[in-house]
Image (tube, rainbow, N blue to C red; front, side, top):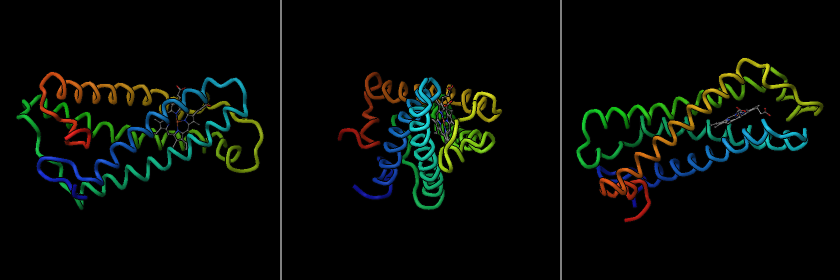
Length: 177
Ligand code: HEM
């Protein structure tokens, strides 16, 4: 398999970025909700430290991903001649996911910085602030729901192609032959 994509399949770099990001987003949704609901401050702080570090890694990966597509690689052609509406829906969800991921990272960092939570977690320690009072956290919590909806729509579309249209779309992203 080649590093770059071909007209029929994604390349190794695109496939790796895709699956690493997918796994990391699932971890971020889980750790974010667990931290928000944690009753023990030490557990909340531990989860949040992990959440913040993985979040910054996702940001770096997403910027690399955008640079990769703009300068180094070309997407495979659309499979199984989609209608204009299907093409538009797929593009909107894909670009929407990039945007929403970047907004999540920015609003997460904004939450920590405006509350001083970054200093508590990565500096001298102390009591965690109440994140719910920070305006960037409102954005973070709302956009998290949007991210979940987009991700579920994206998964549903992939399964529709694979099992109803039977066009073996998942093989393009490295699952199957
Ligand atoms: C793709 C990236 C990210 C995702 C998917 C994500 C997801 C989430 C979710 C689902 C929550 C819970 C929201 C709620 O309670 O309604 C949350 C909370 C939070 N996130 Fe993120 N997040 C991301 C990136 C970041 C980053 C980069 C930071 C900081 C550097 C961050 C800091 C926080 C903080 C401070 C909270 C509040 C936790 C608490 O209340 O204890 N997030 N996140």
